[in-house]
Image (cartoon, rainbow, N blue to C red):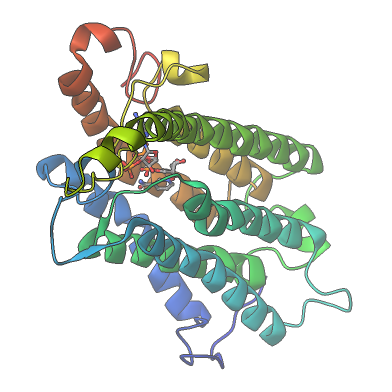
Length: 312
Ligand SMILES: NC(=O)c1ccc[n+]([C@@H]2O[C@H](COP(=O)([O-])OP(=O)(O)OC[C@H]3O[C@@H](n4cnc5c(N)ncnc54)[C@H](OP(=O)(O)O)[C@@H]3O)[C@@H](O)[C@H]2O)c1
């Protein structure tokens, strides 16, 4: 475990942070649920189903998504590398556990930040305020986890075995990885179901447009229609969607719970990540359930929870 009093880097002593500033950042990060809970008091949410239709502060969905998600993984990798270089971790470098955990984070964000916006058939615009809050979340999370993995958590095999970071065992590490992959696959599966709804709508629209083609030629001057796939919503019915309306959220939480388990219960940044995700996404899912009820009727979604079956 390292304790660095001064650091070199993009912003000396802050990025990457020295031990004192790292502790300050993690302290503030622990308070994030208080900030996220303000969402219960505000009905506005400038993203997705509830995006503001025409605001000058809207950013196109794909660009907004990529640029707000990618800072997390870049920050983690930069901080981890920069700090590890300043705390010699022995001849073999950082332990395999640190590298595996960083690789899981990269794997998730290769999908979430890069592939996800490319795969979505369409994405609603995201308001600049939501974008800025999400990007700040990513940077704080990247510093907290990157600092822990690079210097301020266990940095040798002896550190991992010594349990000064809380109970940990190789068996727990392996189980945590398994839980992570179950969450990752489940999250992808349910994201994919939402994509398929719009792909199906796109195919139907293309078939209708092809049929329409002849009559359109006969009636020139008609205004071109908006892409019918954008903002097309249906009630999803595959997998866990039959039980909860936000299973992709639930499984993302399972994923990061597995990461925390693998890192050890004493890994404060991993615990913060799980809690902070839950606190920021839960109000959105609860509001989303209300949105589904208004759009499709309460009788159509009766028996389906927002995100945690039997709880909320
Ligand atoms: N939002 C967060 O705070 C957050 C944080 C961390 C991770 N994530 C993860 O990021 C992923 C996306 O999150 P999200 O909040 O954007 O989820 P979401 O509101 O459910 O939207 C997901 C995507 O599917 C479309 N969509 C949603 N419901 C649909 C329906 N009923 N029929 C057809 N298409 C539908 C949306 O289109 P529109 O954009 O046009 O609405 C959007 O492109 C999830 O896997 C989530 O776990 C989200």
